[in-house]
Length: 422
Image 1 (cartoon, helix red, strand yellow):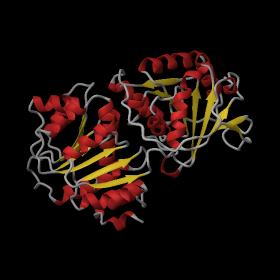
Image 2 (cartoon, rainbow, N blue to C red; image 1 turned 180 degrees about the horizontal axis):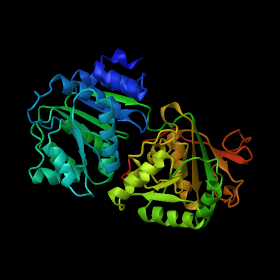
Image 3 (tube, rainbow, N blue to C red; image 1 turned 30 degrees about the horizontal axis):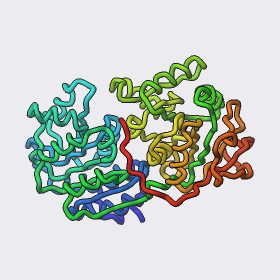
Image 4 (tube, one colour; image 1 turned 60 degrees about the vertical axis):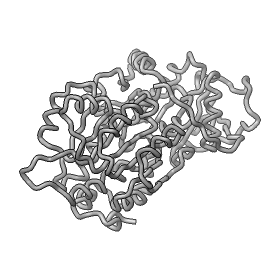
């Protein structure tokens, strides 16, 4: 299917052509017609599926159909609520790219920076507002933002809203927008709390679901490196000394761990920067910009900060620490292998993380090679290795010389509904 078959208006097709897009992704193909019919939508899709365009394109079309006359003040008619600053900026960039021939104005507001420039942009009048919950409530309380004219409301990354403790703020915001509106609700996972929230804000929604959360991109080469916890920094340095590894997104569990790892890499003459919630907005944007441009080779991130990272042709993801939520593993490695491209996801696993690995195997139902042929191995055959683990012949992948075992799931997928500490 082509975008022109989705009944999109010419200004949008022109913008898509300028961006080099001709074929919609599955979620775009399913969601765009629903939104254009002015129906509520419940979307469940993992990262990297093209979700932003799935709501941005039809919203821009609906907004242009009822544009305010020229020389009249514009009211905020569409609100997109998202959990992180990085994601909010990314969404605004998408609206700017897709809407550049429509005349629709948009702006973004988020905390962590002075509100001056944001207020200045709002006072000029905008059609679309992309916001994080805290800053939005703050500006509403100051009577700088008026939500009484909202026609389209998007709640994006609802599961992260829950993880970050924003659900009460979300409910306060929903109470301030018109009851008569079109609502689009997106979440990568659907734990009970998120399903309950969706039920309270959607009216007869159409459900759109693509790429189940248990699946990972077929073109992502995965591997588990067995290593003692104390040797993880040494193993990372060893891998990064291979100059053929072009760019790497490294995941840590904590903000402190990210900063500490950057310092360790610096001592080994490997330049890296960290991105997490304690960094200033300017520092986060600088690191992200440098990483996207290729000036920065290694970016160390926490899960929440990384949710807004969208880098074309990201080749490698390294899980320095395995996540305790298996769905998070899928989100992390989904940063590579986007839009049909290939990618590599390596994960370091120590003895304490073995239960996390088992949960990942149950969820993904995939074999993941185990690499022990490196300078700092922790031989899992000395541990309680499940009977489903067996030796396999080494396959041609990122390191043809590695000696591998293969982790295989031994149970059918289960549902994992756990709350993550932010």
